[in-house]
Amino acid sequence: MDQVTALTDEALLNEALAGCEEAWTALVDRYHGRGFRYLRRQIQDPDLAQDIMQNVWASLVQSLSRGQPDSFAALFWTLLKRRLVDELRRRGRSREAATLEEEAGDGPPLLEQQAAPTPDPADEAVRSEAGQILREALNRLPDHYRLVIVARQLEGRSNREAASLLVAEGLVKPEGDIEKRVENYYYRGLKELRRQLTAMGYPGGGSAA
Amino acid sequence: MTRPIEAVVAEAQERLQRDGRLDVKAFAAAHPEYRTELEELLPVMLQLEQERRWRRAEAQSRSFAHGLFRQLAPAARPTSVGELFRREQAEAGLTPEEQARHSGLPVDAIWRLSQEETPVEQLDNAAIRQLASRVAAPFTALLKEIRRLTSLDALTRSSGPAAVFTRDRETSSDAEREALRKRVQEAARRPPEES
Image (cartoon, chains in turn brown, yellow):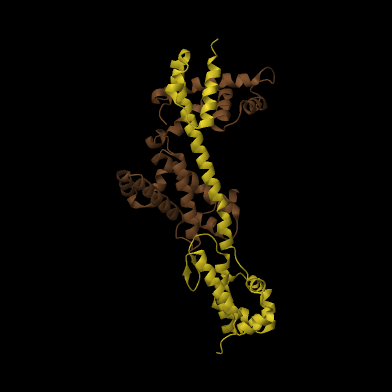
């Protein structure tokens, strides 16, 4: 896989078009996260972001069936920008759409730069992102609190499954009512998470989404 | 007897997980003994839920994009010359003798072409000239036949709502594509024009 990910976009695309699924997966993974992070900064609704991204990829594959682009990156970001602007206009957010078009006047590279995969810590836009702050706050929690919150809330697991994970990770001994302990860790973890968010200067300790 | 706060928070979390939303003010008001604490903690829970929705949306759209390979690959997988000839024999029900008669190619050449593994994408005029020499076929007839078969191949293998570009024309609906495919197949059954 390392060999595949070291290839240029164009080389990956050629491999994918020749029938290499691994190359296609690598190409998708190279752009999808960046595109999604970019959308997340522009819109509030994850379902809408999902629709836009799926639409972008479907259009991109459709476009590839008509011939290879000069630049895969340019094609991806152009399609993404176009879908986003269309969606903003459709929702009556014409001013934001116009601003976005104006900001992205130089085309895809600027957009790509905004959604760089390794954000600079000094980048205010990234630092202010709710999800990024939440992830940082979660990382500061003790392991047993973090495991329970992630399992219960982010992964939608049951108390029993979270209890099994706690045991499997060696964070509790397999004795007593472990599911009760999951409830307790969840509550305490939530309190600690709020404390961390407040300490990180997040107003209201998480009241903003 | 007052329920412990852990149980109340767990109930809020279960409700949020089940309904996908939670009215913080109403829930806190229903538990006045913990009202202040719930008003502090539940917004954090809502933010976690929002994060869960983002993660799910990201994962699902990524999975969707990965799955598009199934649409990308069949259209792009190299087809060999042999596949083109064999496919028409199977789909149009033509024997090699009929194929030979319609195309103006010798029967022996049809047999050899049906086994030819050269990818169609690699064929330019020079390569077709070499191929014609190798299978002992007239260059012009072979060129014409390969062009016709690749057009038919592009039509047959295309799917979905996308416009389909062939070397000869463009069509944008399933009905048009099917009609065009039939026309090409009928043309394949007709005797070749005298040249």
